[in-house]
Length: 76
Image 1: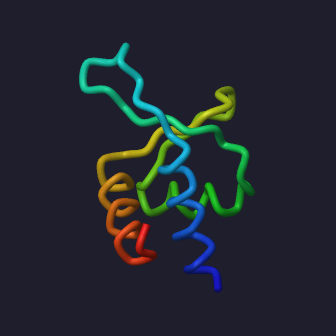
Image 2: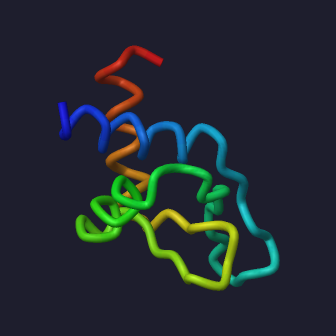
Image 3: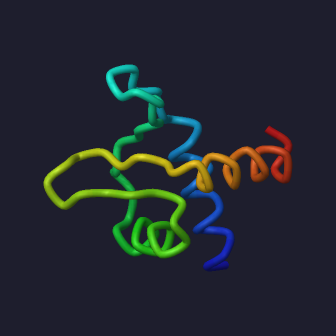
């Protein structure tokens, strides 16, 4: 169950994300309104990065690739 929660949280973060144009390479941001335990687990996998002061997180390249693979897995 823990693996599925982690996967689905990443997938929801990706599906509700937007691309920031003000950064040179553009990054995908999403609001961090998810349980902190799930966000901590995703940070440990290096799928996202977050700051305690910010209300949003950003997905790493690895996190984006994993989320895209999860979209195929869950047929989205």
